[in-house]
Image: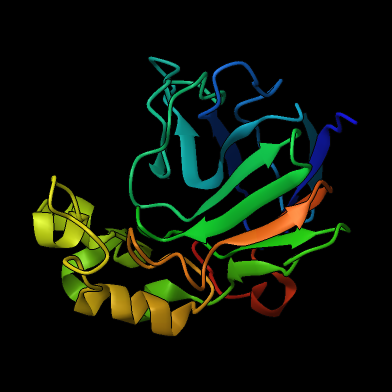
Length: 235
């Protein structure tokens, strides 16, 4: 049986978040690719049964009063408007990744810090069977971000770059024909990420403890899980 999934995006932050999505599957897209959620609001998106892609939150977004160009300090997708229209976000951003499989009736999902971190995210499956655990990075990684990875806005740390984006070195990016889990080990930065958020991907090959599988079900994607609701006071 072909089953669509519902993703309820929840903003538990004490500030506005502009959720966004991008699709990696060829023939399955979402009806919306970007919208606004004020504190306490939520919105539900229905995904086709074979959808694969990512959700992330954009922060500190504004619309230029002259050009009307929309942009965000973190997670910006470069579309110039609230909808991302197929564009992916720019580092740094905390990402919730999903791959739905209607043939085998199984979903795979994870939280990735490979592209850095901006706000806490938790993924909560609402049913299903298998390794249907909640996963996320609910902790304030910005508070322990190394100086060389920090992104600041008006003197406040608002995001933390991943080392690949920050330095563009093969050692951090794990790229090339000879890059394998045995030859590309976690850097000191990846170890900081992993210590702070043990369930999340800290670097490319960190999949043993970071990928979750569940039979087809619906999900909540929560920005600022309740225990960290007051972790930021930017606004």
